Image (tube, rainbow, N blue to C red; front, side, top):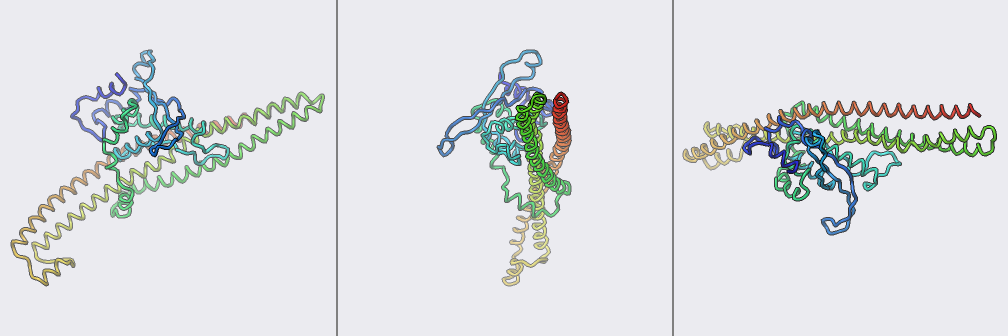
Length: 430
């Protein structure tokens, strides 16, 4: 039995509460898919094929490997189930998650093309170093989903991990694309909401500010990396000069030659140092892209609030029409009022028929407002739980990343001190 089949078998009876494609009864049972399954993106591979317009293209695929945790803990390490996915399939999975779980701050994908990089780093999306960093980022994306208390239980996610064929068809069969709110509709809601929730307004402002500071931090790091690269490479000139000098000296030759070797090694080490730095830059970029996920939750809340306000406004209008019909007074200017004055009042039968229609519309409107209120309250409740979860994760991750980055800088400085200490010893021996 495949890993996905084992997990679905544990889901229990079919008649259970569901959010999207997630069984609510299973959320407590598995707080994380990672307790059941090991997930990794093992390698990347370039391939050539034809695209949708029948033109030849080069693309990259990524090997997803999964194996049951139980087998590993029992000392048996079976061969993992594996399949290949393109970056576009990861994009499809994330879009599905965004639409199906609008109250979740869905983890972002790694960048498709390198941005905010120091000038010596290739921006080519086929560059092996970039592809490797993206492989790491895609693995991190899957682990984020697999450790999320709601998303980890999504059946489409299981299929993405374990079934190579037919996955796209199953995603489209969910109809998630039809549920996607248009950008224009979301923008309209943002501008027209009369009573925005202060918490979501502040969250939107925070996401904008976080995006600004992280972007600035990445740009500063890129400029520092450029200068650092230059400083290290200049040490290579020390090595060349010391080596040339050693050739014309007898007593000093060995010491100068040795010092030159230390300088050459120091100059050559910068590539590995800056490549390691890119790992920390990618961690910052993840939270740069997370800011858009936060705003997506805010936009959905604005749309929910807007629909509630429109339903309440429509209900108030219908109640006013009923009051005017019953009392025979028109409180606001209307074409209907002018028509009555010009052509006479409606008959009692006509008013009674209209009154019945209005009462039916008011009853439906009250039900609609009640439904929208419940929907809005539920969205706020579930979204805020996930936002708090995200904040804890962000604080923990960024603290760890910044500490690790500082440790790496300290280590780099110590290496520089050691190089010059070794050079000093070489000069002492001359």
